[in-house]
Length: 68
Image 1: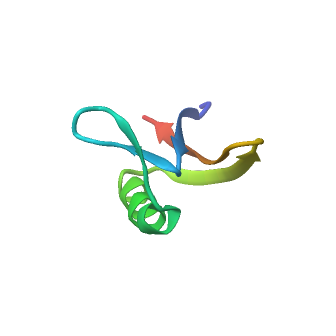
Image 2 (image 1 turned 120 degrees about the vertical axis):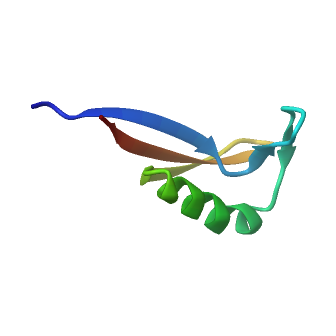
C-alpha cells in the first residue's frame, strides 16, 4: 500500500489575527507554541528554510502528515 501525505507550509514570521489579517510576531514567541500545537495534530516538521532579500527576511517551515 502506498502512503499518502498532505503538506503544510507555515511562515514563522507572521501569524493571522482574528480578522484574518497577517501581523508580524517574534519568532521566539511563536516557534515553540506553534511546533508543539502542530505536533499534537500529527504534523511532522520536515524542513525549515530562511530567505533573505534586500528589505526583508522570511523563515518558512514545511510539515507533512500521513493521510488515512
